[in-house]
Length: 321
Image (cartoon, rainbow, N blue to C red; front, side, top):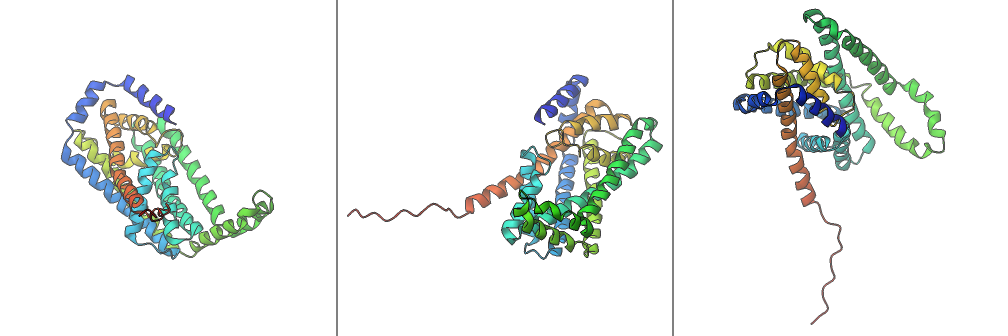
């Protein structure tokens, strides 16, 4: 993944005027960048709130402040680990330690991720359709439109199977195998935790609504960065391209999306007249904002680690006189 990231970035740098790109960054409006940073922190707050709704449905004991800490720590490690789900594992682990219910904690994170994907995939399908209708080179996006429809259909089908009692009953034979038999109790608890959301329509609907708000906020982050660079592309195109860029990043081929995100930003915004140098600078600044907003998670993790009680044995008092 690191190789793919460096390969794509190196290729893009050979296709742009690096000096011109550097001038965009140096001349960027600091107030607009600060606005972008604030909007991204707001998106993190909303992300924690939508997770909190699902945690409460599971009746897990965790305050919003605790969840915010777990979320920031997850973001921090998500930017360090090569896996796309590394941050989710970290925040599920934090909630598990606090609640003592591993399966319910993991399922709350899984459901949160699924509902977020529902909002992003729904937006991607709509925006891919609008892009093919409104852009002069919309025919180039027909394959992307087809891909978003297929991906959304497969995702809905997979999610339906995940919550299906009938499918779970038919899959029980897997846990009669010697290799999986020890996991049967854990699988049962995970399935019971999933079934909680079958009756929590309000919690799921609120989660999707907040996910849609997060799509809006991240779109405005892109737009604020573009304004900071002096670009005047209408905000409509940012709403058009943000879900499509996020859709492309679902393919886990790079380190935290760095590389493919820049390539897709250069392609999409090039369709509406933005220079490759400006688009690349905008995407790299967006990634920098993601990194900066995750830094509090590192501080919080280190603080918790420093305050954790030591398990080292207490030395016996000396017998010397």
